[in-house]
Amino acid sequence: MKKIALLAAVACAITFSACNNTSSVDKNHDGDTTVGEHLDHSLETADEHAGHLHAEADQALADAEAKAKQAQADLDAAVKSGDKKAQEAAQKALDDANAAWEKTKAAAKEAGQAVETGVNNAVDATKDAAHKTGEAIDNAAEKTADKVDAAGKEAERKLNNVKEALKN
Image 1: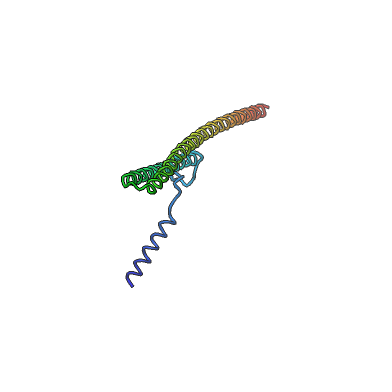
Image 2 (image 1 turned 135 degrees about the vertical axis):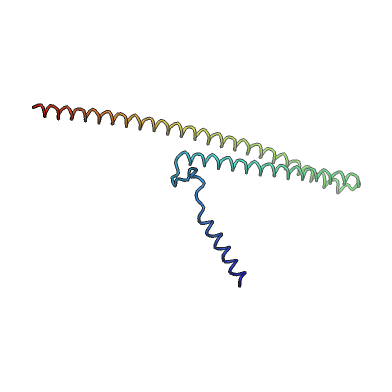
């Protein structure tokens, strides 16, 4: 009975902690997620995915190389034994393994270039978005300054009208 209660308590604790996770996008933990925080999160995620793809490509290359080396060892063993059928089969397996290794290297190179291009495009898009955001803020500040100037001039005009009215 104690084990069931302990298991239930652990399950509740895990469920409770999983439901209380906050978004990792909100860096300053103020409850609001800004455009900058979204951009930062996007770049971090892109880097993580690029790293994951790189690791997968490295693993595929290592596997293909290991298969090629194993096929070469099998061919060497077949040559030593003098068995022509085994030698032919081992040579075919070696040719297939080497072809697969070359295809894997080419695919990994293409994937690496695609990831690099994608990350560079994301960085460029982020820079463009930041630049446009900065321009929008500048424009908004200029418009606000213009409106404040206009409101100040209007208040000054009304003040002068009140002064004129008091003189009369």
